[in-house]
Length: 125
Length: 125
DNA sequence: CTTCTATTTGCAAATTTAGCCAAATAGCCA
DNA sequence: TGGCTATTTGGCTAAATTTGCAAATAGAAG
Image 1 (cartoon, helix red, strand yellow):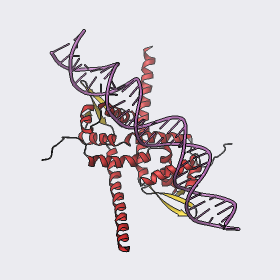
Image 2 (cartoon, rainbow over the protein chains, first blue to last red):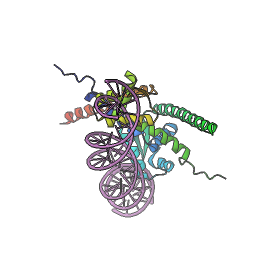
Image 3 (cartoon, protein in one colour):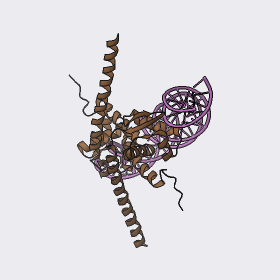
Image 4 (cartoon, chains in turn blue, purple, brown, red):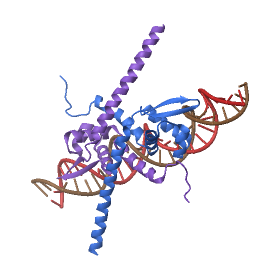
């Protein structure tokens, strides 16, 4: 008989969440987000061109790209000595935009709360 | 006259990507993903209940929850001495599911490629 | 072959993150 | 008040991430 540790997360679930976390981690960096949106907006770009726009060392940019590729978000093609990176799932930017607008709302809420507080304080004195 | 560094990422854009990255980083951890799905599926839960399912130290879980809350993904309500965490944007799980199925497809592709390679090698010898 | 250019990799320093234990806090109840 | 439970915080260590510089690779062109 199988002992039922009633609600403990199993190894299968664990693996699923680790894979997901890998992809999300790859996205969770300002430079890498910029890269993803740039590729979505402008189409495939080579390392040097992206590097220009980012303003970091080219080796750093190369590493960011490698990570995104490793997690399956980008693919590459060669043209001469240059390597072009492609966004494999353009739909991720939809999610990013959605998240961004939710963020904007949230910031506004916070701002309102803050303003209200300040207003009340001024009212008191 | 404004000097145009033609395509360098500006501070405004930078700030946007940093905020987005903050939220994504909060999501990018197996335990925190589990928490998010658990709250989506089962509704608000207290720290101790989540801790049971996760199997880590309660202080660790508490910190994960604090991070998710700090990034605006969760909110809290008190009931007696217990604190319940709520998922503020249940829609994030849609994205997670979408991402997960894309991941599954990708793994399958890789598997096929691998199998094909093995097949070819066997054919050669 | 030599010399470019584009890209990746080795390495080390600085920073961040994750985890646990122990201690502090907060609210409930007797 | 004092004890009990739920949660958070401080402190610490181990591990992972990020970054730039320098060196290695790979391909193109003279």
